[in-house]
Length: 348
Image (cartoon, rainbow, N blue to C red; front, side):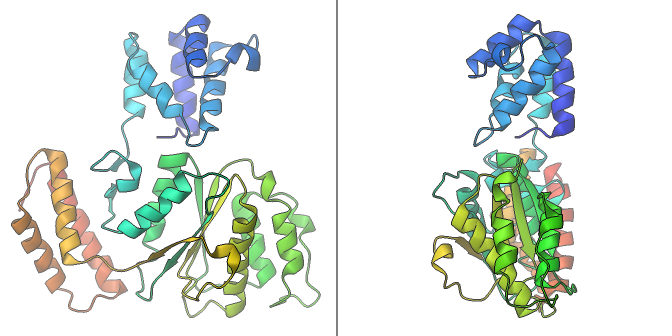
């Protein structure tokens, strides 16, 4: 699992106290990093930070490999620190973040199509798609995807997920792109072209050319998640520029940007997006919730009988004959409360 800034600093502190320079240099060399060439004369802590940064630049990031090495170290302080950092903040039956079923305390049920599609994001090369389109008419199922996207971006490739919600906004195309620049920390916002009759609705080529010209300047990996594209308050013009952003990213395939369109239900006709990944978001079924309960219960070491899991799931769903957004919100809360009990071995 990629380390965040505070985790990197804490680990570097421990390494700086517990390892002599020669020992860290040997570990780094085994991992393919020449610290003495990159930072000659630096302190052990500075070397540790540099080593982690170099490992995080790889695709996928390999700072987890360093943690595994330190976990086996004879120095108990180092071993304990690495072991703690290797503990995931999610539950996955396979330990693979793609298969996570609980994110912190948030239940994430089923969505096998989404999980498969995102493997193209987490195992990229210069030819793989940079765009995912999540469709669906049911309210709630698409935005529900955001929590999983935020989890997987960080847990798999160390990317930062940024969400741009559109419901209830009144952006012009230029104002929309200003939000994108702000979220991605793109430079030169002050030179973004102003439109002669802003809010200009259709002629967006100057805006998009400015955007394309700055994609290679991104200093870190981002997953940009544009949400609410199916909401009634979102104008056709904003859907068009959101789509244009996705097309630009797919065309150029920058090293540090991927785009997700949530709720984009319009048919895709552009050749640039022919190979984009897609997912049809639907609410989970009682059967998938029952399977989820069984999987969560296994973490406690206690078997949860399939028949009992299905019985409980069926009762939960029976209380909500109409599965709308409000019903799914209430149902999700009940699933999460059941998860809490199952994780500690309490079975109804």
